[in-house]
Length: 398
Ligand SMILES: [Mn+2]
Image (cartoon, rainbow, N blue to C red; front, side):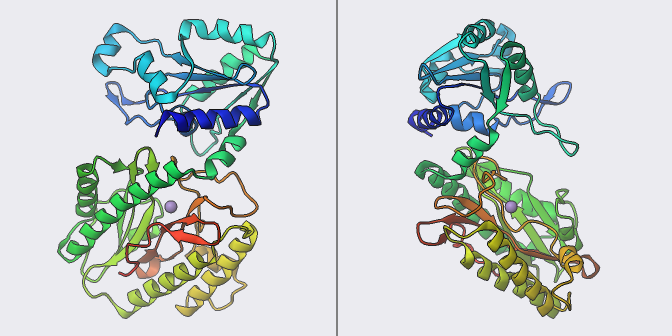
């Protein structure tokens, strides 16, 4: 992404915060054990606002002065030798920000600003009992609450901006999808000769790395009944002849993710497996066709429920379309989510779909008792008068 992109993003945020102060932080590096680092993933809003993919940096947007100030991380000479590190000049060039101050100057800078501003905006840590986010957010929050009278979240404002993709973002998502489709095609060519799930993962990883891309998330390669465990990511089971293999994978390119699922068949399968796959494929096709700007999200969701219940009735899994319990047993996850820097990019809780949103459509049917799990997922761009299936070049067939 160009510096102008990040600069424009900061200007729009500053405008919407009406001359207030906004402070954001990069994530910290995390260790998986004493001496081993996790892959560093930047906080998505920080990346969108700065283009900086390094840990420890902070950003102040001074709306009243119309300036963006970067705060460089404290870094020992040793850390620089081991890990490198971004120079101030590179950080300014990437982000288009106006100046860099050191982390020593950060608090006194804020205290100065706080004489004129009682309120500061930041990104709220949304950790809950299911997951914990990077501690950088909470650390910044405690610094800010010592200095300002009130610290307000602007997660939703940022989510709504980020939900509407700009041309450079759509181009990056398209590149990620092209790389992902290429990986799927390689897998499909050799699916009958593959014995284990991890072989599929290896082919995908190889094809992505050859194009300087990486997995945007832990790939799911799930044969037979494994596909009914929605977050299955062990990818270590044998793929038996005539079994279905669900593959949910996406490359990340220029910071943007693809998220595509296909369910392939090794060998010739059974009539039942073909029947369930066909039901998902037909529903997928109809649901993709529903998406257009101006469609109310709640109308979309009820139309999806009707279509998915019909699919389940076709394959004899539910009799009564009012049986929501059975419906949710065979189709237990959401039909769609936003896509962007985050694989599950917030759409900002919109009431209606809007042009230039990118979202997934991913119907599935899961029948553990029969060892069948089928999902088909594409990435859809909402256009001025309808939608475009960005991953539509990849056949949905098994
Ligand atoms: Mn998805």
